Image (cartoon, rainbow, N blue to C red):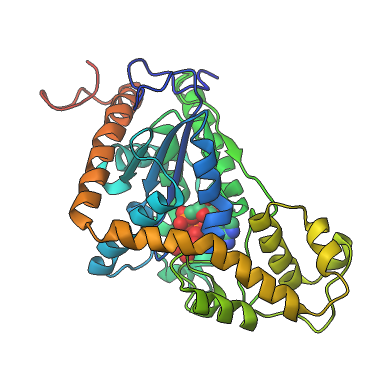
Length: 360
Ligand code: AQP
């Protein structure tokens, strides 16, 4: 396949050598980022900034696939941007922007709506989870969400996508779309995407139900740790986190069939950056009380500085908006020519003169 490097000539966003693999990843401004977002995605994003050319997007087009109150959406977009910067995203060396500001995403998504097959979308488990029992009432946007996600990535010819385990299926679908596009039009235009899914906390589960993933939009705030939670709230949520009556096992195999215990131990291991076995070597055979106290301490130490930095950044919303707009200009400079070429391949006539459009 053509590129592992985002090889479109002259489109390196930040002077990064074009030999660095290009990464795209997005997060919805559907609430304050959770510990699940942090361990499943954001912490990896920060690390991947070394050695990659990174494009990070706050995906507001995805967010409106379920109802968002408009004023709240604007606030949450800024809060998300501040959180990302506070976690260590470098918006100068890399690109950070809000998705709706780069039209190429929606343009390519429409083409992909026409490439993807209904049968493929019918298999997507996230749609089933999010639509719930009343599927007929779900938005059409929620159904075609994976096509927009494919467009997000492929509009940049990005080849590496760091995500939590829950997004694996969507990335497989993105590859199916890229291959079908290339096949149908007889081109070698869209590259294959490689997911980057790492660590013992690739899927962090709800604190109230160890079989459900931790989500920013879960109606129960007790189900999640928000990156902006103050220390006393974190301590209380962990103390109240659902567990079972058995003591912690001494070996990882003993977590089998104990989703809540597995989740809390996994969170501890991910934060402390030690294997699950090492956590159990220390706490195995004991009840949850001492372990929960240590876990709360670990969380507070990790998340406290992020929350403080988020508040500091949010104090200047105008500067934050300007930063996102600059990011959007740089993102569009990469995506527009790629999407224009995709439109030409499909058979559209050139766009209006004077606008970044399709090559003639
Ligand atoms: N619980 C999780 N464990 C590990 N990774 C997770 N991610 C989300 N939840 C977990 C990862 O975070 C990135 C951004 O996710 P998103 O905002 O695009 O949407 P999502 O996956 O639907 O996340 P939420 O928090 O559950 O949002 P809502 O509540 O709006 O649906 C992704 O890489 C995802 O894998």
